[in-house]
Image (cartoon, rainbow, N blue to C red; front, side, top):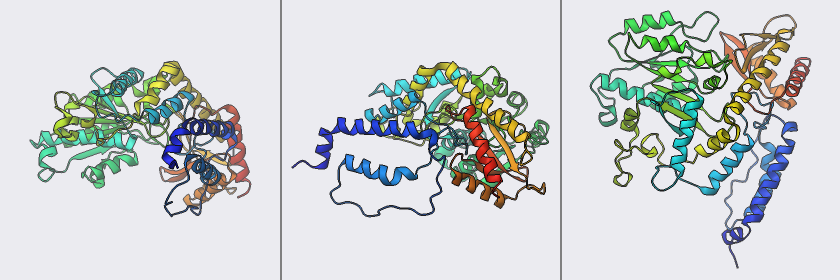
Length: 468
């Protein structure tokens, strides 16, 4: 009698065909699926099966019980966070990642590593970065920020004559990290790096902006002229997609010694469009850069890139000293460049996407999402139910709910409003606070979103408003 593994091997074609069949059903229904699901209770079986039932039966179980409870985040009206979808090319590449199952730790035993280098080279061109930048794939913006700030910490330690990768941080004075409107992942990275969340110094932003006040930044650097600092600049904030003046910040490096890390998780894709590329002018002056692929490039989770001009520092921090892994400093492999020793073949979906759609395809996604955000903004500004809180610069609309007595909603009321919107099923958005005002973010990041979707989104918003 064959066991389940042997039976599955014989049924592999049937299994894969079934997965394709169910995938096509999902994509056929995606536009009408609820954008998100509120799951108050978990419905799962905690018992480990002794024998198992084989893949076909497991797939049927998953589809009948759990698949129905998953969010429609791949669809055109999921506007929460900054969540892209998955293009056909990226799905093809991602499926093949699992089929070929490469552990991309080096370039010695497989072409996968060379393909990652090729993909990074194309991305450098996409973002108009010089060849002085090297890059690697990581899981997401949080890990890319972690890798960049780990290098920055190593740089700052060297300024004090300390190699913390060998000696630790025990003799290192606090490193001053400064930013105007940092993403929460920056705080998380500082915590993981042992630098501390409270050691991030916030520099005031320009009035009614999320862009750092350059003069106040200059004053801080002048006051700390003899202290190595780390400046975290933003290329696209999550609330309003605001950009720091990257070019001017880069020019400050002529007078002050600081590491410049640019968090361009999704805003870096402004480089794809002649209409918006001025926003990232000066990005090449960075020492390290974070950009996500699973946001505006619309490849499946998880996928991000970190770029650096200082691969030597990167290797000092992340080198793996196993003898069989070779000389990390002279010939750094991927295993020496990020926290991961085992690495998924993340480059392949991006490689498929870039070759399938090219620069013009990336530009089309960016400009179309911006167009949809502007169409939604127009509806907000023409309504007495909602109030726009900041200009819509790119693909995120920041607004709030206005009571019938013309007062704005509290944060709890915003959450209740969004719960009702999620229950409606047609759209999903996330809450925030902008300059002290409870608000809602609508992030247009999916390649599928159309003008028809904007009308459906607006109808859902008005329907919920009329019920409160």
